[in-house]
Image (cartoon, rainbow, N blue to C red; front, top):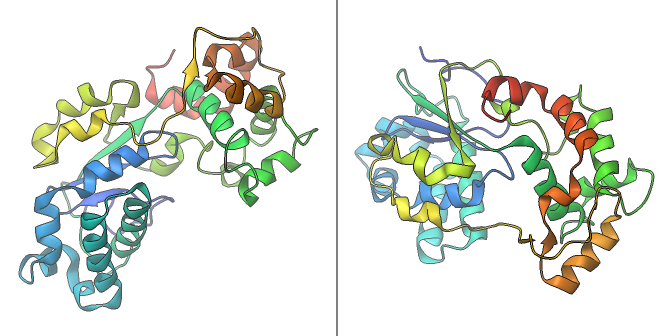
Length: 282
């Protein structure tokens, strides 16, 4: 029995291709939207989903369920539309299907991969994207804001929140939870770097089957940072001022403007387990 088979998985569960025999773990702010499009645009996976002969082999008795019918509907809608919203709906129902006990995708020999990102860069991205973006008033972002001294937290205040709560992973939203949380208890994981996604994934093109590598070069969601225009140290700049900067310049300040030695040190403590297990972001 493989490490995945029969074992409950941390949320979120991986994208599992039972046809090709691999499981791809992803985290928020780690290229997830791009990877979802790349994953579900596999013609071979789509044929397996729709085949009355192949589907029971890969997805078990669930193929006769309403849950599976939902997957087929979402597969049709995604093929027709192909938007970011479509692919999120598709992956949500697909992951729910594969988390059931009757589906049999995670058999022995499943190859396991995790897309990783420099934890410090990811923390800045999570801050500007969520505390300074359209999701600012969602309940999960408000939870962070309400835990900070001001209603417009600076990056330093956000990092302080992370540092104060670092021993309780369950408290963190997926956008700033440590990346290794989803693979706790699992070994034999191959790490793929977001910073070199195309290069790293090309090493395993024989694993991915008929998926189009060109899709990896298209960033579906990303923040824009202005390296040419900056106002110096933005560590203690309020979220409102960061938002104003973006409105004035069309992009956020460069990431380095949010970082100093103290902040970097705190983030290394917050994401200590990531740094230790990855071993490549020193």
